[in-house]
Image (cartoon, rainbow, N blue to C red; front, side, top):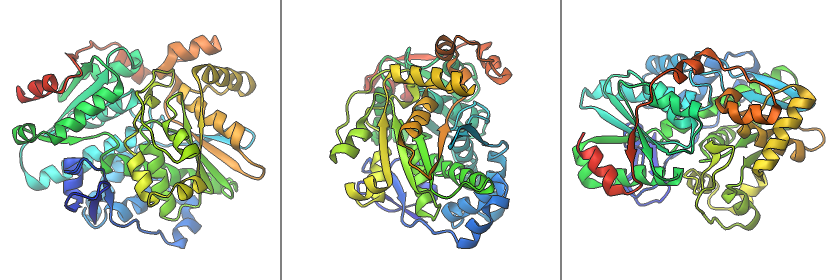
Length: 433
């Protein structure tokens, strides 16, 4: 499979190059030249397949031309050592719980898959160390750090905005040591993302060290997240509720919903999608006006969605040929303030007993307001509410239990490198490594 750049001004790449480079030479995002339709027989029997079995079929369609079958199967089965159950919350609304991985957040699958795939390519080459740069607004950093922890031949640098991630999230990537370095940037997420992108474009730095990214700009990070949506469909079909299925995805950098849209292009019979935003409503405004107008990100309760210029918009735009009409025929949007997030967490808890995290709150409310007669809705509950314990407890007046794996992170000692948002400072740090 060949991959092209969304900016259309870079050479075609094979999977190896697309994964190791992360970003194309023209600063575009890699896209596969073709998206393979899966056979009807797959969907006819999907409800009888395990998460690992159905995900291997999807992975083979993406990566089977470039990775040996047995190696790819091992990567998939090793990545999916946990379930992502669909749980009824209220009437026709269901939660797809994506927080059963190592860091209790949805990005665990993409990070773990990419780590194994990158290691596969490194072993084939037998060459020098690869350095992973990843910007995080919360969950990406912890998922990538833990997915790559202890993987030979790879060092990870996690860039995060100072004071703008939860303490639990921060502890998941600042206490690991080994091959993980946390960099605390005096700025916002967009500044972190800009540092990463500028590093990829700096010729001197790339001669000094081999760089790649584990943000959802990397095809090996975002594509495996499509597994979730096939699995959700399979579970809903098993319950006899897969017809007229609406999928709602809390959206920040838009890697997760982009993976879902790729699944749809492969034949996954989802009727329509809702992208739920917090106050960072750039995509919502695009849906209303047809104009994409990035803005500085705003800090909110749903911090993993605090993105003012979502990278994966370029992939969505490319996927539908730049047609606003095609995008809006399949995807609608919703946007919620912190106050509305609080209202929804409290109301859901009182009415159903289900505890939402701030991101899931946006998804749940969008379905409450947007689900039509005869439709069933599934929203992504993207992180365990304990990762936002102070916020959730203050809203519900409860005491969210902290799972032991999170508590273990919090007992660790924080180690991070303070950094300005100036690229020259970041470059100098990397050049000294």
